[in-house]
Length: 444
Image (cartoon, rainbow, N blue to C red; front, side, top):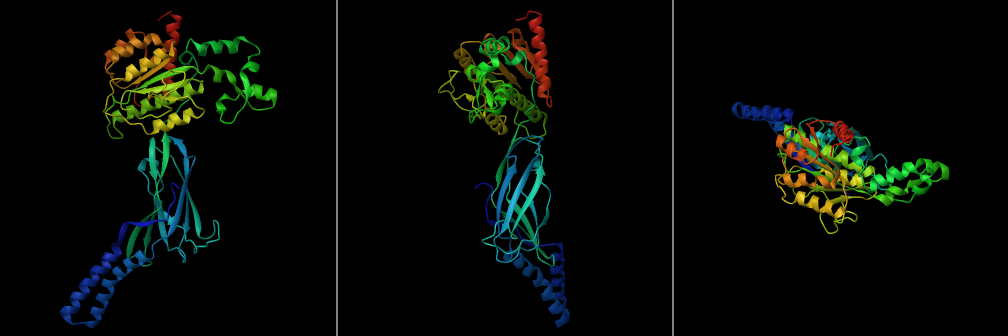
């Protein structure tokens, strides 16, 4: 079981503390003095002080903690900046009570685990007891600062002898992965998430037929996402109902994610911050489209990292490796994939071609979004896909050369710039305002 174990291995082998080194040094001096002056009493003191640190190190080695450790997270998947609780249950496996010790969880600094704290004294092992005196449950709240799959564990138990002469640390149990997803913010509904095809037709149907609630609601089935619950129909029928029209329409959307343009710099650099903003944008747009009932296909400009459900029905990409999300838990699957995505120096030369092939198989204009942090190698080909997108929106980092925006803008793409740290909701609103202004002015 992940996060469970009873192995106790030295993380820091037994060694003297500052007090132990001092006592040992005094003992060596006493031995030298006894040899010089022939004092047997000084010899006794020297032997005692020299042997004491060695005996203490043997003590903390023999009396090492023998624990079984299980670990869980509540919730087990968390977004950047959100709180989760690490619950660590430790059970004494020794027939003797556990010695005095301190504990801490081993984890990257970005997880934010608490520093070392006193470990409770546990009673002797009780084979038939459940959560008895031989068991303790340790809880701590953490707020992860960076997305990714972070290893939490093993449990680090530090041990000193009763005189504070020797010290050792032991790693107990196995680590467990804490999945930290990108930050997702709600996006406004509007012109950017409804294609002038199937999606619009169902929107018009829902608003034009007074009794549409009866037509689009059906009984809830296990596995239906809760976002599709139709509360008005639920109240009318006195049972849980979901929207049927979203199941029937299932419109498509495509997203091009730039994963190769940003240098894979260390955390804290401007390039890394820009890439994190890019991932937040992709996550927020992707979850928004899934919530609106779209099938989402994501194409990466770098080497493939997203899994999704490769090959999908309506997009006509059966057999391809395009990451597609269209199941009831698609938003969770997308965020889990994005949690581990990294900037890569490897550039694909067929990313835009893959996007174009998917759009052509769709057979109609569908929403297309590109989130770029550099100039794609197939910039001209990407610009030519404008006629297949409705709308076609490019979110471009402000560090990108201006000619990228010029080429895409001249082809009719709606271009919006973003900076490191920008709120995805504000970027989305800027795009909505420009799209609305374009429609009012009669633009393409």
